[in-house]
Length: 378
Image (tube, rainbow, N blue to C red; front, side, top):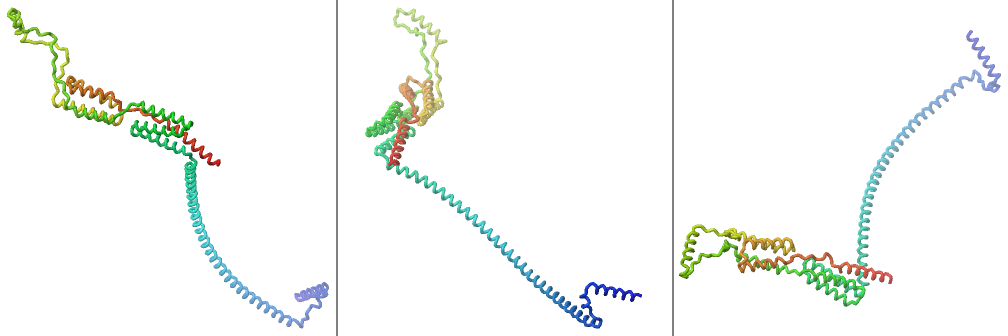
């Protein structure tokens, strides 16, 4: 039953194929030719299998070859990366060294620029000085000499206190200006003459002579006479004298009796202050106080300290008045010498600045500027 059905279906399918495609009829293989068709199929299958094996071996070979090449390329890439890193670090180090060297070069260049600025400034100053010396008129050299004299006079006044030399220098400067016969220098000559008059009006000091006089007095202190105990005479007149005339016997008797009675108790009234005697030790202290006061006065002369000098001389005068006998010739002469030296002035108020100095400085600046301007125009 089943076979009949299958046959029927095969017939129906065959008919359908036959009816659908006429070319299929020509392609139908007869049943007697089926073994030959199986051999070709087996050959094709073996050929395909062989090709598949070849392809598998070829794929494996090419895969292995590709992997080897990939590994080699990866190794080369790694080597190149390490080489590149090394070169990069080398380049960075060289770059750092170059930057450091560049910084040093810039620093040295800045130093050279600063030195060039200094050299340029010095060169300009030197050129200016050369120009000043080349364009100056001969009269300007006389003004330079006058300027030197004025500066030297100021040094003599404020450093040495030598007024005579300062006046002589200012007078010489005025004589040098007189030689020029330039009316434009009259203000300078007027200032010089004013300085000369102001210096001549200052009190003359003789510090060496004054110190020698004080030293001489200091050596004569031992020869002074200290005042002793001196009692003044009684104001009442002594009337107890006995007359030699015989007729005055009664009066003489009365005077003798009165003298005898009054000799038991004697009272005298005195208005003069009595000075106590000094012991030898106290006398030595007194002399040393005098010497110390005179020595202090000498130092005040050296330092031109008028207040200390006056105080020291007043101390000496008070000691002489209170403790020494001014009736003695030596002491009296000593006291008069102290009074004479007390009136001396040991300090002099010098002018703060010579009036001719700024006038001369201004005149010199104007002359130099004018000369430089004329040389630039030429």
